[in-house]
Amino acid sequence: MTASAAPAGAPRAGVLELRGISKRYRGAPRDAVAELSLTVPAGAVCVLIGPSGCGKTTALKMVNRLIEPSSGEILIDGVSVRDRRPADLRREIGYVIQQVGLLPHLTVFANIATVPKLLGWPKDRIRTRADELMRLIGLEPEEYAHRYPAELSGGQQQRVGLARALAADPPVMLMDEPFSAVDPITRERLQNDFLRLHRQVPKTVVFVSHDIDEAVKMADLVAVMDGGRLIQCAPPAELLSAPANSFVADFVGADRTLKGLSLVRLEDLELAPAPLVAEGTPAESVRERIAAGALRPLEDAVLVTDERGRPRYWRAMDRLGEPAGTARVEPVLDRVTTLRDALAALFEAGAAYGVVVDGDGACVGLVGVDAITGSLRGPVARSEAA
Ligand SMILES: Nc1ncnc2c1ncn2[C@@H]1O[C@H](COP(=O)(O)OP(=O)(O)OP(=O)(O)O)[C@@H](O)[C@H]1O
Ligand SMILES: [Mg+2]
Image 1: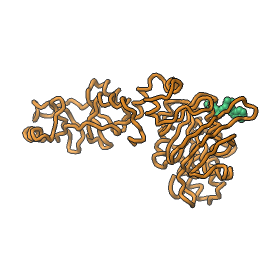
Image 2: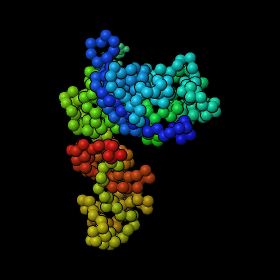
Image 3: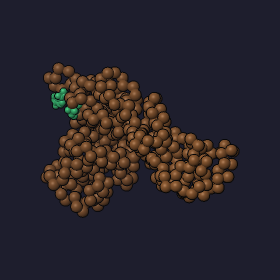
Image 4: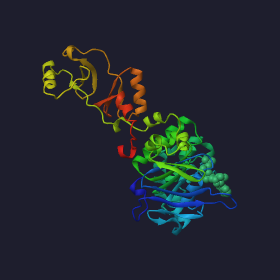
């Protein structure tokens, strides 16, 4: 995660390219993976999704050569994985397997330290790295480092699996349904933890899921597979707005419009300017600003703020200068709020507009129901917004 944790050597970008990969298991009547071509840009999260048995795990395992393709080629930063020793490859590619797969006879610390040890890191560096990762995944080293996997909850085990895969700071991560074994609340937390980590240290990630909500939330690119074939590969917004065929549409589900709203945050929208007036401004100078075109009231009202720009109350023009009322501004929405949550808050408050604030609570604009529903009309590429 830190620069110091990366082994010395050439910078590793982690562009992953699958070129026409097929795999037919011995004696099988058809390919488990058929002609799969896919490019994951460096630092992007690609979610492989599709029904059970469609070839997701097989595709993943060909990247680190746990399985050899029958044909096709896989390149990392332009170098074919076939030209790499499998042992080297697996040290450079973090792998979170479908069933957690912690070594039961090793402590949490020893599990996390596996790859750094193989890489011959000095003891104190391994210790520091393991402590750092344990704090990142929310497990205090003092309490958990010496426990065995059986002494952890399912969610904690998955966290350790994640820490172990991250240990040597690999540029590429393969994650096979990493959060499937936990309850929905823990899963949401793990997903958020992962996204937070990924924002800090972007890695090229191939993430297998069969949960479309998880895919929409986590992915820069979603690759939908069926029967070993790639059906559609697109940013989540495009997948939701323009499913390639009925299989994808069914997979995405009937409420894909609402799912699309979870994809975009208020900060991604162009907000309407708020008619801000600092508390205590004389009514006359408010009118002057309006006359000069510097202030445009909304439905004949202005938004009065405190000295730090935080919204206090709406004030009708014909009552300018009257003392502060008790009416609160509702809803006030942090700009990281998803459109889905923002819409719910607007409906709940029965308001046409919400006031959007930054992390300090200062008003940065207004959002209306129309702006939210309007955003659904065109595909909003999250990658662009980001
Ligand atoms: N070692 C193997 N030998 C023969 N066939 C296999 C082997 N592993 C997987 N298969 C078959 O290949 C196909 C793809 O399996 P794979 O494990 O890649 O699916 P998956 O998409 O990961 O499924 P799931 O969502 O259930 O994990 C399946 O039909 C499976 O039965
Ligand atoms: Mg699988």
